[in-house]
Length: 119
Image 1 (cartoon, rainbow, N blue to C red):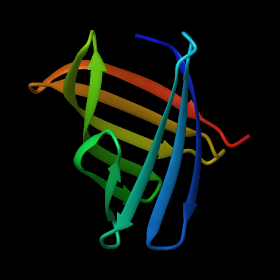
Image 2 (image 1 turned 90 degrees about the vertical axis):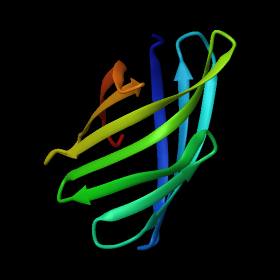
Image 3 (image 1 turned 120 degrees about the vertical axis):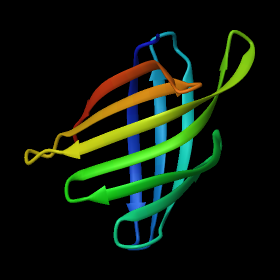
Image 4 (image 1 turned 45 degrees about the horizontal axis):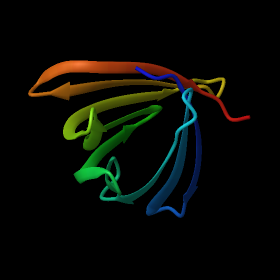
């Protein structure tokens, strides 16, 4: 329910992708997340991050990237785990369209649509 901006930097060596994310929320809070993805085969990847419960599973086909993972969130003083199903599509003009949906007990409880561009 908070607006944010996100800066992402990444490095890729052909086998491993390391991403550094910085979320800046409109209330002034900042959240940093570091991702590490390992290529499993031609299309599949496995990822980890500090606040991810278990591995993230990702697939890439052409210009589409799908990732699903369980994220530990703290809300109203309680820790909860929500499942993310996250699709990204790279457009010919370099813009990345991202649609993420969040689920708890199999029920969609949130979502977002974001557009990323390389400055």
